[in-house]
Length: 625
Image 1 (spheres, one colour):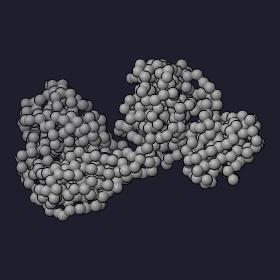
Image 2 (cartoon, helix red, strand yellow):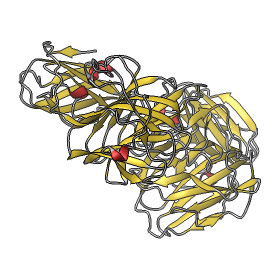
Image 3 (cartoon, helix red, strand yellow):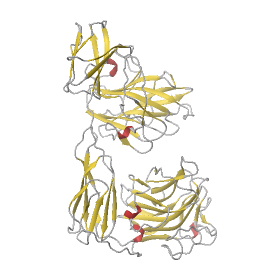
Image 4 (cartoon, one colour):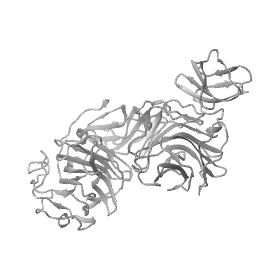
């Protein structure tokens, strides 16, 4: 941890200048919220929200006349059904800065969903608070999100009162943080430590009030002591203001790179400050002596999030998400998943996460298909979760193909016949468009593949496939003909006609990304993917230039008319060669000596050569005349 500048600790004062809303719910027993300043915006009068009888929550230092709220412990609001949803508006909507929503919460029964949020109007809700049963028996989890939940894996106890704090940055990006605090009131945001959960995106730059939601008859939640402030527990506002940070990768390679953060500030030279960071080195302008400038944090490993903490004349904590410094893969690009079993695919340098949820995981073993020599491991996913995307050389003409081995190992979670989902697709070179899609759907006890560019597949393969069997899929797009094609189980070493072909309504300007996608819990079966290859020629033709991961690799002559095959590389390290015939039988396995191996015993035909040097592998076609 790096620290600069002198320390001056200021006093924390509590005032009413930043208070936007206060409600202790101390109405008459059984009183309706709509009779006490709240407005129903959905399901008015249906299982109306009320307060209980002497069910006020207690929390040392927060509740009671001597606590932060300085209010008697009386009644509290009950969310225990489905039906009416209500909101309480601020006197003036908030359009900038941060909002802090604090309250006591006690969950008797959690059902996955959100029950409290900020909002605007009757349809726009953000900074949503979620609760659900934990995978640990008898525990619950909390989450936060603007459009979907980001749950913490931290377990909490039901029937226990906690202090909750939601922080929302009033903007269209709308970053939001949640703290579930079991005891005490942290004097500063920094003192509260790492949030229980954080989320961003899909925010709104105007906040009109607080919203309570009854979404399930099984929920049973009590809320008390609600406060909304513009600072952490209404502490004195800080003159120092931090702007929106920018992050920049110092390099972009296949290794773990470093990045830098630039945080602009105004309102400096108004006191003494100490800056610290959880990672990296702080430099740049000194807010103790400079009115405005930039705080710079450098030397941070990609994938490492940073918390910048400022103490002194005031206290500020800023959570900064790490960028991904991942390279664009050069085609031909081969992915045998040579990663540690159990790792997230999104944690590897060739892949990036899209959306949120459970990650696609590396699994042990390989899928097999005649003519393809599988190495490394494979990946598996099921149901809903985060997508994995890899970028490759942007292609704007000719053709582009993505091939893979596929196995639907378990379809039991998909119970409705003809339920469909797309699981693999091309994207453009930014990942923004995702329209070249391979679909799968349940058909009786079997499944079938489809192809499409929209919300549904426009054409389906008439063949049905058994669960637990391996298929070889090649997705291709012809820019000249504007034709999207799917080849199912082509013969390696030959030619094939597409199994399914569609003409996109709008031609693709470029394709530069490939994505594996998880749909919903009841749409995506358990899928195993192996040996992805992306190239300008289809993998089943075994282009001799394909799949090289070894610098300076040369294999000659090809075709071989004599008895020796020569192999050279730029590294000139120890090289091992395995040769397979087109039925997958290994016919040669040897080390290269003096850049030469003897293939005189091989009969005429086409072979697949796997060349390994250190941890890199290349697959080549070999013709013996």
